[in-house]
Image 1 (cartoon, rainbow, N blue to C red):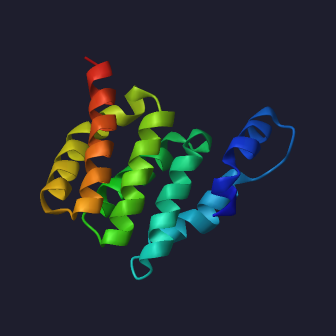
Image 2 (image 1 turned 180 degrees about the vertical axis):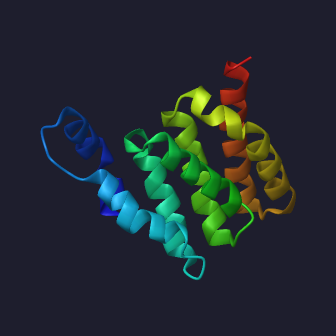
Length: 141
């Protein structure tokens, strides 16, 4: 969690090489396990959120895995889908449109499904996230 909060200070230093930090090791050994922790929704949700914070550091396969995990999590418990909504929004902010393009149909479908059954608080996040996804899609037209 703390690494996610210090991203603005940490990521530029990792990318420039001014500090040595094995971010891929963190993803491979910690974050991926959290993504699969279905019995621990807060851990699963934080793994999704963390992955979105450092999406620029991920290889294409891991990006796809965490985007896919975020889409699947929209059908999970309230805790997980709230983190998933936040992760999807961040993915839309930091990734290239071409990286999100393969997921656009399922993203729209999952967000619309969630919006139809969401509580008032979750509905706001779902609609806000939907607007980010639509902006990405429209920019590709």
